[in-house]
Structures are given as C-alpha cells and as structure tokens.
Image (cartoon, rainbow, N blue to C red):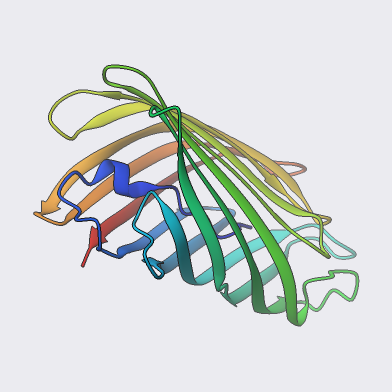
Length: 228
C-alpha cells in the first residue's frame, strides 16, 4: 500500500520555468502488489514551483495481498487525493513542502475481510511533508513522510542521490510503510534525471521488498516528471 508521494521534483528539471506546473506519473510492482499514479503540482496565485502555495491533484491504483482472517486476501484500491500545500526554501540549500488533503478511495477485497478498515469507500485526511537538501556539489538528499488518518497508514522514504552528469543522478533509497493490516520495508537504488524530452525526465528504481509474514521479493519502478 502507498500514500500519495510527490517530492519537489522541479529541482530535478532544470528546464522548468517559474510558472510551470509539474506533472507526474509512475508505476511500481512486485509479486506482492502494484502501485500506479498520475498527478500534478499546480502553483496557486503568485506561487511558483518551489516557493509558495501549490494545489496537488493525485489519482492512483493499488493492489496488494495479505494474510487476514483467511490467508492470501487480495485487495484492489482506486483513490483520488486532492491537497493544498506550501513549498519554501530554507537556508538556500534546503527546500521544504507541507501538504494537507483528503483521500477518497474504494477498496475491494477477495475474499471479503470485515476486519479491514479500508474496505468499501472511505474519505480520510492526509498529511505529507517533504525536505530536499543539497549537502555539497552533486549530492542531494530527498526525504518524504506521509500519513493517513483513520487506518494508521504511513509512508516514509529517504533517497540520497549523487549527480553523475548534467542531469543524471544515482543513489540508494530506503522505504518504510504500513497500516493496521501490514508492515513493510524496502531498500534499493534509483537512477534519476534520465531525459525523455526537453521537459520530461524519468527515474528508474529497483529494490528488495520485505512484508511481514510474506517472502522477500524484488520490486522495480518507473517515475516520470514533466513540466507544461
């Protein structure tokens, strides 16, 4: 399971203009589940990407399975997560963001599990904070933490990226996530800044995923970021 996750990715798109909106899409998968999303960060009023008020729109699809009152329960979840956020700069080398929103989701379970608090259609408050730090020339840390009220859901990710060229960066990432139904963690590596077009870049990620009471599996993912 995942929560909406959007870093201040404009920092990885040097061609972005101040008034641009940032569009995001991605997918990741393993034998234990998949997660796909399409989203946008849109400046409001006099705000710009990286500084000021931001509207976030997010649509996602999630599949997962777990052991509940019966073994191997499969879940299919569709969600819509609008949010309002504020992005700002701290001491020139640190960029922060905070988002408050709501996630409206419908979860189908096979077989049905009455103990799963996400079953059916739910609307819940979401909170997310991002912090991107440039420690030295070519070294950047990206930290994200998000939570959802009502089901104990959380998602925490940290990436440390070394710039290898004009836009390409490589480095490790670590993820912890869970809710009342499960706990999981992942460690891996990601390659970011891969150019698709002048205004679109990609990030490739691969890692090892461990969910409580499940076998350790591999996971791969692709993320796209572009400006309009």
